[in-house]
Amino acid sequence: MNKQPIISIQGLSKTYDGGFQALRDVDLEIRKGEIFALLGPNGAGKTTLINIVCGIVNPTEGRVTVDGHDIITGYRATRSMIGLVPQELPTEAFETVWNTVSFSRGLFGKPANPGHIESVLKSLSLWDKKDNKMMTLSGGMKRRVLIAKALSHEPRILFLDEPTAGVDVELRQDMWNLVRGLRDSGVTIILTTHYIEEAEQMAERVGVINQGSLILVQEKQELMDRLGNKQLRLHLHEPLESIPEALSGFDLEFVPESCELIYTYHSQRERTGVTMLLLALGEERITFHDVDTKQSSLEEIFVNLVTWEK
Ligand SMILES: Nc1ncnc2c1ncn2[C@@H]1O[C@H](COP(=O)(O)OP(=O)(O)O)[C@@H](O)[C@H]1O
Ligand SMILES: [Mg+2]
View 1: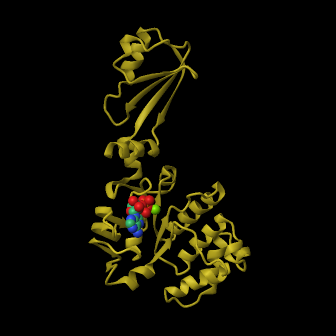
View 2: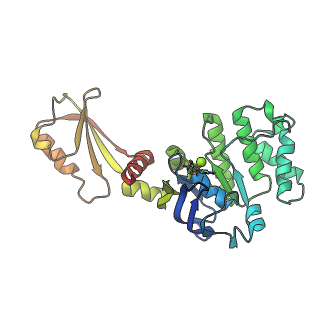
């Protein structure tokens, strides 16, 4: 993949009027053509960060460039490269879907291109709704229109701010497929989410933001490998009343409901302790009829990180 940055953020801070500091000295580079997930709890500063790059919110300190252009001095150039799917739903109640999306393209000074608008509406299953007024659409359909609007001017960078918050499963799948298709066509995608599952499924790299600070940025797979625990689950023949003294040196838990003995360990360590555990179990005459392993999800990693920061 091309590792050249398309967005470069340096020393970015934001203090809102009233004194609340929403971003603290954020440095981040987004690579051309990647899907990047910005992950963080509500209030972490995700929308603030996106809105600054899109020129909707002014930074207090720091510098952002998009494809080499400064977002403040080169605003027109940078804004026309970017599509933004905002967090909140649109308000143009009396406009039709077709007009809403076509108008959006015009705002960026692009000449009309009905063929492009048609293909965007079709890719979002909105074509048969093109003459409907916005107020007649369901929440899910409105969200599709937001995406269509963001794609109306053929942006090279697409920001999706919590695109699937409160969205049904079907639309979520459609959206993910669309995003992958856009990425394959060369569009750089930045999505924010507090659904870890979404980052896990979609992103190549993940940034974790908490209380305005970007606390880490990493390849998703590396993050999962580095911080991930593994669990070895042994399905025992006989239930245990308690963990025997001889096994107290292992991180073990017994689940009576499933008669499982669960051993948690770090898969990246050279000595995982699995061999020693199995030997010790043999000596204690604890037998099992099945075994499986489970790797911790990005969700568990994320919860650990954010709790650890506080
Ligand atoms: N216009 C504003 N004025 C003052 N505080 C704001 C404003 N917008 C957002 N904030 C505050 O900044 C923090 C970060 O908000 P936001 O960027 O929306 O977080 P996120 O998108 O991660 O949920 C929150 O505590 C929020 O209340
Ligand atoms: Mg937000």
